[in-house]
Image 1 (cartoon, rainbow, N blue to C red):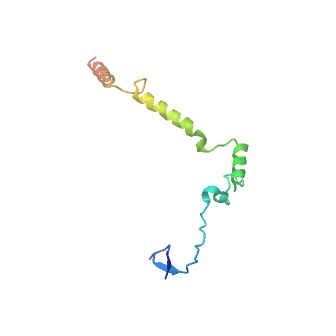
Image 2: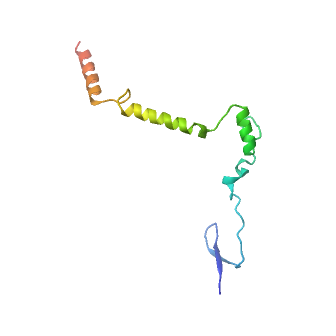
Image 3: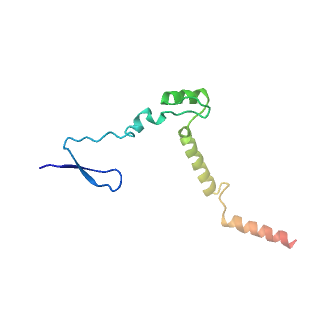
Length: 112
């Protein structure tokens, strides 16, 4: 004889026997990634209604605003430029000789 069990979502997480045709209730957060449910009741700091993607985009465009993801490529390019600057010796990298010259310069100033 077949039997079907589900586990409770809260402690003590016991298994409970359910009918074979049992279907769990859909969870409220199902589909958050592919619909506007995450925008429900959302308001901008000035009180404007931005409770859907369309309203949010319209608000952002009207106020000359953007989201962080619009800068992803420029931030990556800036990061590469900074890394190159600090590691290739073209301005930012400090070599052993640079340190030696600085120490020598400071010591010579003291002797005067």
